[in-house]
Length: 402
Image 1 (spheres, rainbow, N blue to C red):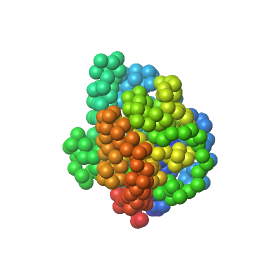
Image 2: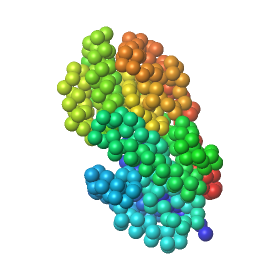
Image 3: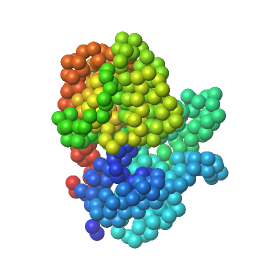
Image 4: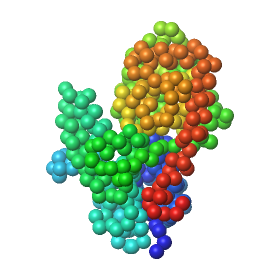
């Protein structure tokens, strides 16, 4: 029987314009080199569905995409009623479940790969072939951090419950599947400790970076007509850790930088900025772009790329992209965790406002040193983070010839 792979993914992976879709797209490409792939996915809206369908139909054995339309309040109510994680309810879709069941009953599926823990609910209970579950991050740990941060807020109990219920669910899924994957060894080690599973069941498969696409030698259109040194942050701007990061930088770090560099500016580059993020543009030196067709021109224009994340899980694609573009990077310790790079050589790491302001200021002041650090970072990305090398273990894990 010829192998055929079912790929379950919580967001249709095209276009690869955010962290989760970058990883899932490259995983899809890697799987398609091993065997025909059937994709069953969700999408946030009809536009995303149409864009993904146009690109992916010629590349798949079959493709099913359903728009998820569950509100967070409804998901919370249903989750509490049924004793489930809210995360699962947000990605529950009856039509997609029926499609998956029919596809597996058809008998052609020999391997299943699930991407993101929310898709484990679609795994058939009686499937006999190899099953990989790419959790990417330990999401329950993220909610535990939210609960700690929100101790005096109404959402504390929601996040505390999600951390507990989702953590139990993640462990149960991992015991059921053949192998669970995480984006870094730090995430994998955390999950082994939490679940009690060994390294033969829990593996790290790291993110990569397309260094041909993220190449400073390419020519980009000018995007920034302002004057003064520019710090850039990229990311999905309705995602809480990103919101917290840019608020902190704009309100507490940029003013310190501007004491020494009065013309310094901070560009927040990313789709779906919340009203809270848009309001930051009222602060001196702050730019909020909203969605851009391509982040590379903004990275090319940056004198420093910053990642002041207070909470970060796994490997930050935004840092891999910036480093591949030979940009000098200043990151929090949380953001830098999991990246094979040496502080002081490939990037600068700082955790308080004064330290981060000083690090960014040093890059503004010493352009040759900043350029040298950026080039060292790109060299490290080329040597360490090619996607083919990062995803090569998939063939062995699935028992398929490479």
